[in-house]
Length: 388
Image: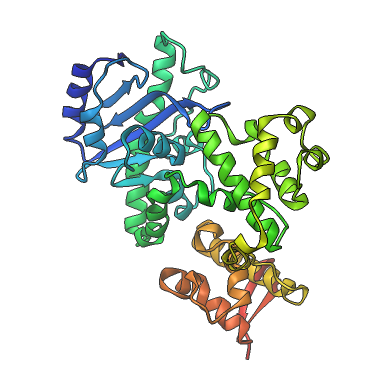
């Protein structure tokens, strides 16, 4: 197994790969301290073998490989591929198309929500993968024959796994069940950098307009700095500290150093000065008042009176998902379930398509008092029963 590090070698490999209907892709990378993942190895598998591409090679032209990623006649298969897609997006400027994720698809095949590649290969290929090189520093060169063989194993079995999964989905008419998830997997919005929306990723309990505006401005500032410096967000300032600063809304450096989580060295630094200046610019007349609406729309907290209903619907969901052998999360998330409880007449994914047939119809009939949940002594299980 050789490492491709020259343009002609890559072009020759792409001539073979573009003739395939399906290829499997995996990336080895490091990301401990950087904002962007550092690609160290790109593995591409096909029916007859695999190619290992060196993204660290100097002066190698990736044009043919990037064209392959956009070739609509070649399906690109990943396993838990969000970070792989991110790497390829950063390298090429576009999301590969078309794509398929076996971890997502496995949710409709009875293999669990986050099945590992190791367990997937064991289930479909009957092979126990060698994980001896799992902790390899893939940035170091040269890579040993053992490391290259290990890396190839991350894609050589994936084609067979895909074939088995695709066959199962077709035979059981479940291809549409994962279509929405695959579209979301390939959505460019997940891989674009949008500092204005950075605040939406931060967990918090604040809802005042001043807090939301402060958090949005501080998160945007941190995001831009992280991108510019290519360092992790948390290396600049931690989420929890950012929330504390937005809550305290310090007016000057003296108040800033009293905020919980602000280290003494940070309190005296240019970072603290910049954050103080950002907060000082946020006078009430400049508040973005739409943030309150955005925050309310994201908040699906239920009143205590509806907690029991939520728990019963979660039990119904578990029963129905077990009945058809899919992960309940594929049918709907708990957040979406709470949205349905808060506003049952609003558009909701469980009220249309296959999700309605599998679960939505049952949820609707339960809320109308037509169905109940009982313990069946014969089967020693909890079952759904029509009420007379």
